[in-house]
Image (cartoon, rainbow, N blue to C red; front, side, top):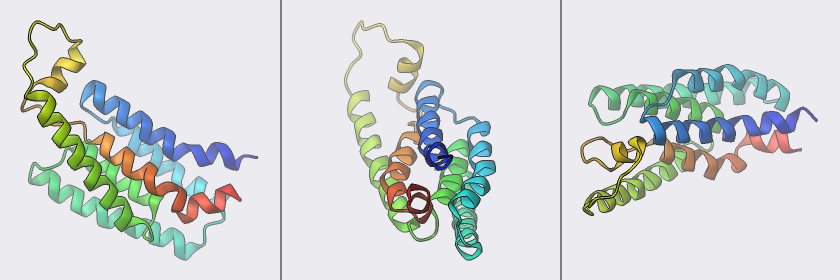
Length: 166
């Protein structure tokens, strides 16, 4: 009975991060920290083996290292790097490549969408502050949306999900 709320932790956290990124262009640390802290609880409740849990941890470490490198090169925001890494923790090593592929495709589609929308003159349309910030060229894009899309796409295929759904 307790497994179902735990099953929803990852998708709910991703959705919240995506919404926060759209409205504020930041992903609060508390989201990534909560996901990091709740993973061991989910792993225990799911009965994830120690080997599997360590492989999830390895996925987290690999993605965190790459995320830090991309952040240092100013190619990815800090919140995005942390969310990507902690999402890899939940997704695990087995689904890491599909996860990164989905995030990449969603991120590309998101970038093309933003380029197209930003090329349209705003005219006299009065936008809310958050929408005006998104519309303005040079402000980056809320990549948390792409991370959310990738995570939600692969989550049902993960070992954690399958163990919790049983």
